[in-house]
Image (cartoon, rainbow, N blue to C red; front, top):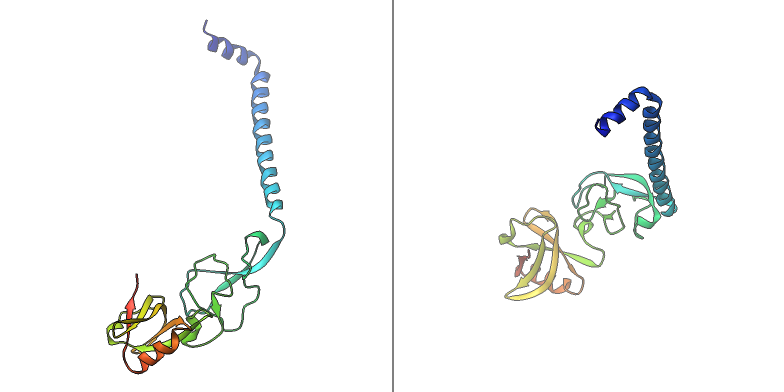
Length: 190
């Protein structure tokens, strides 16, 4: 007689051995699950204390009113500039994605074209008839008569034919002078 047949016949006559094996396997699986849960608890305790910060509810673009919720996150994961309070009328300075922790560089309480600009930049209004396809957030260069006046800028607002561009404060006076004379051109950068 084959060994597997002998084992089946033996187990048929001694059902308690079958149930003993089933209980032993169930106990082993239970102990393994308990050990994994203990590892999870240990890892969670290793993160230390939590802090309450503002997180974006959904994907939002520059100029939107900030739609946020407060969440408790491990302090080790929270950036230093994370917002713990939100100013009234806070609008977004740049695009944010759902679940992103908002920082002081993401929002502004200032109204108008300056709201979308970084704090170290200056916003200049430029009328360029060839820049009709400009969108907020586009990276640009500003030139005049073949000379680059501002190597890096960003479109922060649009109003009728005026394109508001944030440029470095050192470049702002020359860009404003060229814009006033109608000589400023917007070059789009990929």
